[in-house]
Image 1 (cartoon, rainbow, N blue to C red):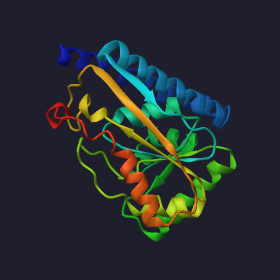
Image 2 (cartoon, helix red, strand yellow):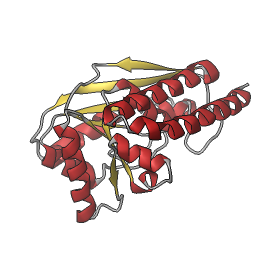
Image 3 (cartoon, rainbow, N blue to C red):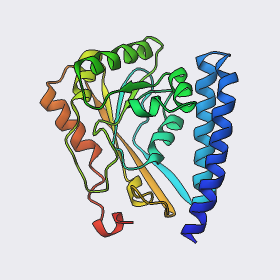
Length: 236
């Protein structure tokens, strides 16, 4: 049953995504606000597909932040990259350069106002990231970053990449960390997804201007608080 659900989900969601990407080009003519609303509608469509076709639901714990704040999230699957577009207020998303260079989708993403970054972490890449982040903040938008830099399996707790600390120091904004457990139901590298509830736990607000070691330790601890799950359950 899980395999059948996953096949139906893939067909319907990706066909819908093609339609969303193609329709985004004329929507973009109305300006960035219209395009961001379009992106939120796509995220809602994704959520509907997950709930109805896969039996996957979202449970939010804590307070969802608003306005200009850095949201630093755990990253275990594609699920949260889309669901957070729905939960947050039109965030500027830090994502790897390769995604922003995908023909068609990449142009739409750039028009939306994402922040492409070279994961090698060069000084030039950091400057580019900061320029895009400051432009988002000037519009009153927050910044969403996955500070581990890539998807990990449940239980993995890699150190945060340097880009997070650079962004935190330069932007002088508070941080809200997000722990989640999407890897239990949507395991990395696996097509078949399991039904259940994915938790998004928003932390307390961490203030700006903390020393690098302190903010990194605080965020690392908070994004990993759900990793006390049974490893057998996380294995999918």
